[in-house]
Image (cartoon, rainbow, N blue to C red; front, side, top):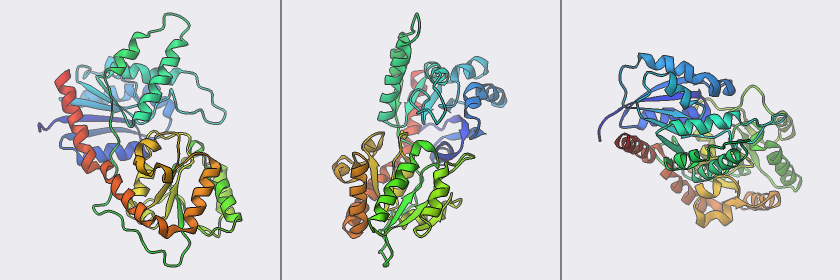
Length: 366
């Protein structure tokens, strides 16, 4: 394989965005130079980060390809960068056409249009799941149809023809997970998602209260990344479940985080926004049994033959499935082991070559 020089632009380098950029760089057969900005001021990143990166790229003499993510205004980048002829791959972790509005927010369409024009200006567009790609086009077509006059309907087919799906790589230890013995302790429930409203933590904690009040034993690990505004429900939960909590707050050490996951029995998601689910995949790889809503990307990510066990239809179904698991944890050990092995397909060892080939195909077409 030809060794290429790739410049990777990440305007929002934190969380899964950071993991993705570092993972591809570390595992690629190509030379990848990262240019990044911190994961804050997301609206400014979408409006103005292209101006910052256009200036930064002036110092780059030669590169074979550029990769950027969805917080980038690719049209502005190409307008103001001296590297405008270099082929560009745009990767969507999320998009602002379908991302749910936060409390007190109202969608204006501005940032969705930035995503659309960026996709139009890129040479190749890749989404992190088929679910994400489908929802993007559904929302984009609705947006275009609501333009007051002269809707640019032609852009939809143009964008669609250059899109694909590539799952993000995940950082796993070299060896797979073993299912630890119970050691007489209650099963451990893991919450390792972002501490934000779109993960619906209030629903999660209400389910735990029902289970606790029914006398079902469990331990609880509340980990995951948090930002400046932490939902108040976490402070209440820290007090409410003080007798159950074994870990609370973000785990800085990657090794300690993976060790904690390896002690987990079950990982639960109640999210209303998830285009792939790296935190879930990490937990399942380390031996946690997943309980996931039938919405979002989860049915696509989890093997179909296990859907009746790992996918829940509503809150009542989650309570039922979680209760049964907590009362019979040993009965799930073999399935946990199988699912752990299934997640290996998302490792960077498997995914990095796919991204490298995507860049080579991009160069061949431009």
